[in-house]
Image 1 (tube, rainbow, N blue to C red):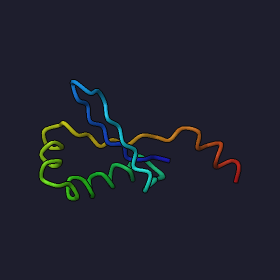
Image 2: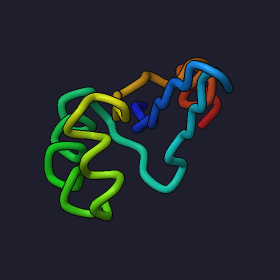
Image 3: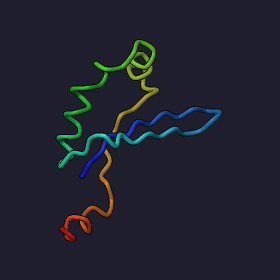
Length: 73
C-alpha cells in the first residue's frame, strides 16, 4: 500500500509532514498518478506557488507492516 505524503521544511521550525489517510494506492505508479492528477489542480494560489517553487513536495511512501495485515485476512 502506498500513500501521499506532503513534506514542507522550514528553516526555523523544522519539518512539517502530513500523511493523506483518505486515499491508499496499491502501487507506487497509481500513487504518483494521483499526485499528477490532483496536484496542483486543488491548491490555492499561495500553496500552488510554493509547490511550483519546490517549497512543498508531495511524495509517495510505502506503508510498512501491511504484509502482516494482508496475511491476517
